[in-house]
Image (tube, rainbow, N blue to C red; front, top):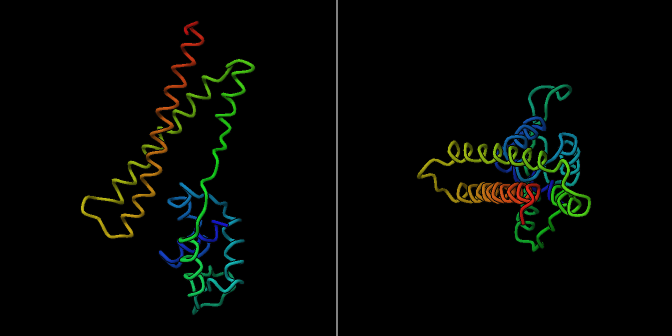
Amino acid sequence: MSLPHAILTALLEKPSSGLELTRRFDRSIGYFWSATHQQIYRELGKLEQGGLIRALPSELPARGQKKEFEVLPAGRAELTRWVGESQDPKPIRDPLLLRLRAAAVVGPEGLEAELRRHLALHQRQSATYAAIEERDFPPGRNADEDRLRRLVLHAGIGLEEFWLEWLTEALAELTDMTAGGE
């Protein structure tokens, strides 16, 4: 149910075409709520049919032109309702953790390379988040909406810090195990 709300959020920030939305998802919202281009376009149609968004009028003929969408009052009301709704945290479902559990049964053959690959991926993501923070949140930028956006970014930074620490620990344990240590 969250994809429509992610789209409503993005459109309230800035009316956009489907293509612009997919690009914005790739650059920002997609870091914490991913969606394919097809999913976004499909959801735009549903939101428009549901009376939550509308295509902005265009002076040019519609055929072949990209439609730009804006949120209607009903869409804002739905997003406001959803923001205040209660929802339990989702349980962790990570294939890497399952691989470690399986390695406890069948042995860690090949696991070190995968752990190192994940470590490199998380190092890159951490650097990306640091660059976003430096670019988008210079000192003194403290409008309420910026403070909340920065909190979302800090959640991503914190998760990356967790993974970097945990992967370093996992690699150390694996090295100790393969060296015959206890």
